[in-house]
Length: 161
Length: 323
Image 1 (cartoon, rainbow over the protein chains, first blue to last red):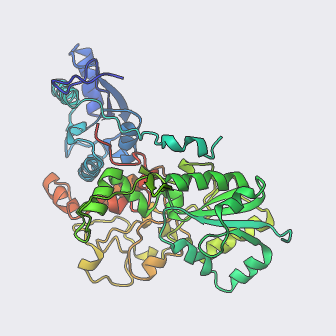
Image 2: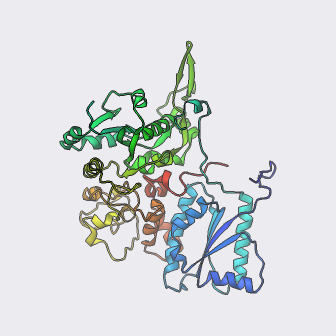
């Protein structure tokens, strides 16, 4: 487990893990373009390609957080440009409500982000990813796992073998 | 003692409504009593924990445990009853999903104690007394169960065979479960003893649900006069029906109130709140970010509404504890 330094609150040796859901038609192609044009950006993103950002079930996002992601990034086509006409509007609607809910669950707003990135926008993708990594680095690890609880002095009378 | 099958009931963190539900079997209770011996039921019978401890392991045919697990005593009882029973049934929403007490997972022990024993307007506690697990008074040792930070469902504590959903389970489902138990005609382990389809399927207003919902304003039940025939979602009220298992015969909807989700999700859904969120949000009738924000901001309490009964068994289980 990385250690926290007293002065800055930042965590030493910590690399944020971002799970990114990119749509097949726009943002995934932007990431692909970033690769072929050899743009360098922070290697903290694990990209999951989905056919449409509208396919991203809120369960995917919560599951990513529950399984150890420090941030979740959703990338889709610009409004009006959805390959399936309206999928990204569905994304937009659920994003607004999910963002509120995630915040209520104690997860900072910076950890959950939506970006509209077309197939040609490799540079804005680079900027968005780098920016998110910087913010997550400042926040430190997420740690949503629920700790085991036990009352030490009752151990001897515990009924579990 | 006769050699009738033995049955037990126990309650953990719950309101007592599930105990009522057993009594609500009405005259069928007599059939139950004719068929089984109730060997332990703290709310009704004077048997103690030591009586259960004295029983042989596996000697109880079935134990029905309602309530979530919040204290160390509830946890111990869950383990004890598991050992003594052939079949352990999580009875009701709290036991199955965490239930209403599970919303305390938005908080923790310290803040709950602070609110209850210090800050609430009706509290007078100048000495700041809060419950302690051990206390010495005149040479006598007094003890209380430990209070956990996180509320858990029964199956997060011990192995559970079946689930009877609901707040509370309906008499019809209870009677069916008892029949299945006594006849030995049991479904696979882990089954939720209710239909595996969404509530909308058995909703009397099903025909009035539009092909495509378009909600331009969410309203709470007290803010609107609901008509008694149209789909409640179409009237802008958050009805958990699409994300909730059926089997209750749409009791709340028949009372002109929206479903609040007490039967939990169907087997295809991992996280009821997330699924409900998806259903509600995608029905918002706007493509404009600011307007969407305005419309969804009318949902007063997203976690409390979407996870009213299922926060402890949701993907995140509780509000993140401060690091």
